[in-house]
Length: 315
Ligand SMILES: Nc1ncnc2c1ncn2[C@@H]1O[C@H](COP(=O)(O)OP(=O)(O)O)[C@@H](O)[C@H]1O
Ligand SMILES: [Mg+2]
Image (cartoon, rainbow, N blue to C red; front, top):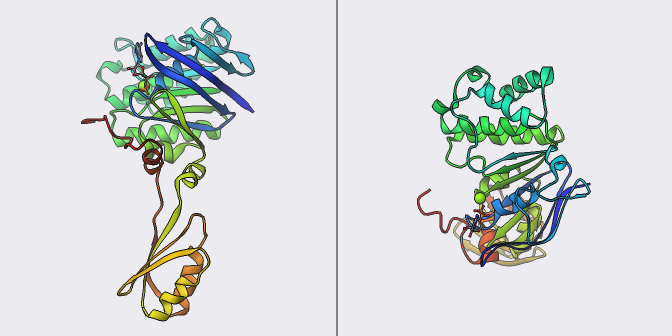
């Protein structure tokens, strides 16, 4: 089931086309990773999807209804973790949560319970009575996430929730996102860190310069760019007969030998890893073996001709 979708959405800021006919959809219970460099249009896409700003054209659907800036009811099912931390530094952690819960109409005993649960969920129970002004960046981010969860949304949108924080808080947040998804929450997770998206997303949408340039599971995206498979293997008994045996495996394109080290290149998805291993084992044994696996970075590089990290000067 599709929880949210954008079809052919255009959004301009003056002359700049921040969203250039963007289409994407988010399925119930999945973590959709929205990946792209700074300025790609991720935050704009989120603002339009959440109904914070209007689109110039195109259609935004949520739970089968048309989203627009005046649709308050749709917003109640949604939690939004903004890119900038939006908490009150002079209120305690607990008061922040009571405030945001109240905005969504949660009150009384339910509010009390949700405040306690969400603080626990983000690991800040001990700091309930403390003011976040003195929190570390990671703790502030975790409180920011709690504020978006206190009303139990079934669709959570997170805009770069791990920028500029310590690895421990980052892992905590990634674990929390997994946990939410396991419990049925649909998550749109936005980041320019490909490792994060690669680690937690069920499906990935890659944006660049206002456009969606790829959409699929990690395997699909990699399969699309991968034309060859490279296996490196070190054998105990190198011989020219072994080289010939490797060459005879179906799908193998080239075999190069340097002493005991062989590099075997096959066509994409040849599934030759096991065959190569079996042939090598028959001829005496294997002391080392590795297969080169492309990453999302390679996908981005192939599709755009530039590195995802370009433009991220000193971060
Ligand atoms: N309020 C705004 N007014 C004018 N230009 C904007 C505004 N917000 C974003 N932009 C521009 O739109 C493009 C997309 O920005 P944004 O959606 O923030 O990208 P991302 O979140 O992927 O970094 C960028 O070129 C940015 O400078
Ligand atoms: Mg952004």
